[in-house]
Length: 337
Ligand code: UT7
Image 1 (cartoon, rainbow, N blue to C red):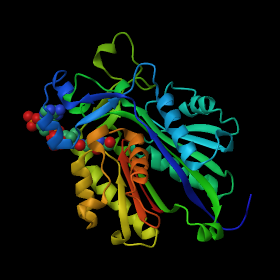
Image 2 (tube, helix red, strand yellow):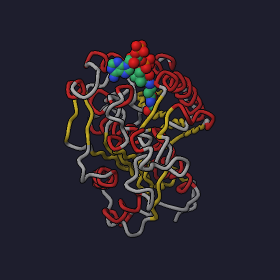
Image 3 (cartoon, helix red, strand yellow):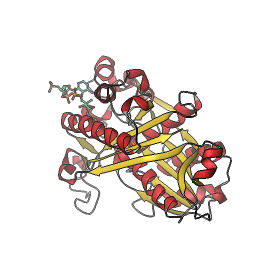
């Protein structure tokens, strides 16, 4: 492997969403809610729901195949697979191991990252360290979630928000002189943060070692998502703005240089608040929350792939990816496309 100065490039993206669509009208039949409430408070119109025989590894594998094809490589070229998810197929082995087998990526080491909605950007930054130290050359990162398996379908505060899906990207080591000759999307800067003092405002309380689900507490739905929505909302706006500003500065840019923002898709109001605070026109944000709802770790890579394929992101554009999630966790990354 080359020891000349190198950078992490993004050579392909992909995504996959399950076929089944659950609309707000469908939810009106399940809980006490309305399409008007959901659209005006969140911007969500519908979300995708995976079938019983589509675990997270299936969604992840399909998104990965899409990204591998887009990158023009084969699964054997991969030397590391990182799956970011909070809805793994099983507690262990890692979902990344199932994906490795399904892809036939026999040369890849595989492990998972758990950072909730920030998971994809945590995976990206982890992969970048592997690349920058010369340890790995071609890395598949995936954000994949089957949140429908963790939703309390009787809780209107949360069940209207989430959806299933997966997005992926192929990162590759490239010497800087090569990037100068052939411009390739290059990661310029990343920041990440965590505030573990606020674990209880968004979590799945039960099902782990602290609070196993037993026949006695099974009715309490402890293994489903619970959230203090308004608290999360406020923290999300503050942390995402700060992370964005730090990443932009670290990249040697100003907010005005950012042509496209790919924010975590949780709520249109959060997205608009961030864009406004950065002083950017709202059109700079790529938004698909209406179609998919909040897909946690999958939301940024799905949006990134859609933005690339639809021509929203053009060669030379500076792109800001910014996430926030349970933990609390947050992250921002700037890429020159
Ligand atoms: O992925 C990262 C983490 N997640 C997020 O970023 C989500 C952050 N939070 C949010 O997006 C918003 O806080 C929500 C969309 C979850 C809620 O919006 P809100 O404007 O903060 O509403 P609220 O929670 O303060 O609830 C307002 C009212 C309440 O009624 P009362 O107590 O005022 O009578 C809720 O019971 O809306 C009621 N409500 C609903 N009504 C109809 C809550 N959910 C629903 C619903 N349909 N689905």
